[in-house]
Length: 227
Image (cartoon, rainbow, N blue to C red; front, side, top):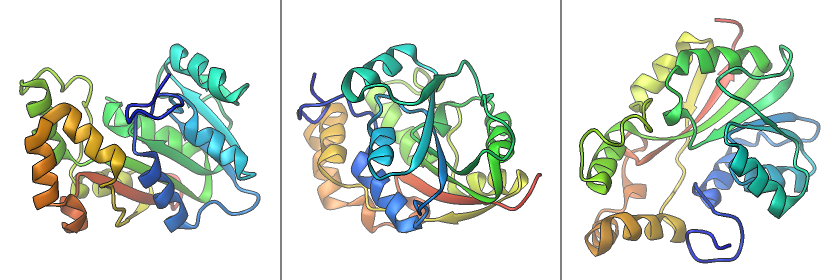
């Protein structure tokens, strides 16, 4: 199997290079932390965390992706879930991660309640999710429809909306400046928008925009206590 950029390995759904850069920028992966990844996909990030010596656990809703992750990385510690409920006791983790997941969760309030529940006081939720308006434009062009993609990307937020939602659940939000334009990003644009999209990225690189106008939001949400 190859990734979407043509290299050998499991299929890559998100921008792993940018996501890793975000993790490094937060300084959250310190010795002894307990980490939960929500939406492990084909297992690349969870495997990388374990390789770094972090105590990490994953959950995934798609049984086929769990099987694929274990094909590539062996018996990864992944629990299959069927909804937003997390099968862990209160205050189990110092760090919860989700990359390209939040926008798919219809009941984002229930999701955030669960994240707050399993985090220890002062724990952090690190979120990467597409920003609402750039993604609305991209998906409308990609699907050639203003409605077909909305069931899948059902919880898109602007930066302000995401900050307010996190704060309502007892989190303090901090946005990070994370460059995303790399080989993976350009290939995704080329695949869905063709050469006009590639040209647009070269002329108006989204990494040069203010953080609030970026295509992707990277947020460190620190748990202040129960909402």
